[in-house]
Image (tube, rainbow, N blue to C red):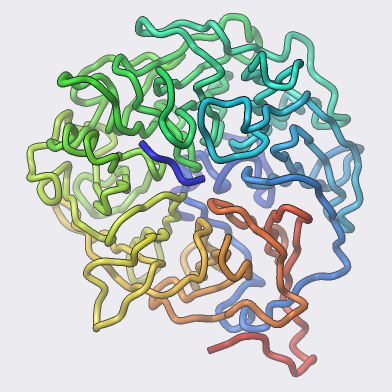
Length: 515
């Protein structure tokens, strides 16, 4: 597996009960469903045409940033704050109003690329998006560290105080040497790119390999009890490879953990790769067909490096459909798979493109490697994602690499391509609605492209904001980076700064970038 670095009506069901104020962003794509939906009444489709960079927010940063920033309204000293982690193993808390640092912590020397067997991130430090536990006042994350310039390599899972950045008692947990399914965790060949998730007192951390697929890595889901990190357990693919590496990481409905795995090597027997997995407490995997899905052509996907693991699972509820509790999975082969999350179905029975799961459909000309977003509005339920080689089956002669699927309300539910448009870069999209079901706006960054923020109508794909002018130009935003939304502002992490965008006052008479 070569790795290039839902819905407002049901979010209450899919989120862990209780703890977070509505505006807090405590994990990747805002919710454990990984739907990437934010509700903000200020971001109407008309208003977003007048986005501008908020220059009153000044938050310089140092080092490559792959992890999504997080936000807490009750942060250090009761102040609203952003938490940002970098590949230099720096974790910083920034004042949400001004961008000024509240605390900063370095977790050890990252590993230089020259000391890794393969890879594409230099240096390798914190890559996967952390998760925040407000009850424990803790920030959980994985850092790749070395005390001796790369000779020794350690994946260490930290719990940091949200209030001052100090390491909490009993942490960090060193993953090296953990055993599962006959495999032993070797930090030198494992990378931690997927977002972490917290469920019922256990922290789940996904691992895959490095870019280039070197060494005897496996797909790991490490389960760390936050009250007793030394009692960690894990799932690992039986076959070599099968990394869980998608930037969206793991998803949960509050009971099960859902993971995507990629291609395995040197096996004719399915061993956990090329799959959507449903894991129980502690990463337990039953092996029953209800708890996994793998396409019928999984061996071909292995051979073609076209694995299912490029985009993490997203959980979606579609009332009126049968079944209605669904999983959407997007493969590097350009195929979308719609699954019943109460019975994933085991080995598929189609031809590899159609007939897999509830329904499968080729929707991209090639790679899908990013985190998708999902939303339900009056016209239906949609899933939007970035397709490296453009959408397939785009309606009305249109085309483009930002693709929206529509899930039909039927028995069984159906998939179709709703619209396609161009996004000049490879960022992962999110969506805002004004009330949970109205005026959907897709936000995406032209990461490693034009490095501008873009907005699109979530029902039609029409461009609402085309990036603005010179003042809105960001310097360099890493692929997979995804925006977050807080109190009428959109925030994007670049290598040199956390950028803030807001709606220009209506009386300014200036409109930026509407087409």
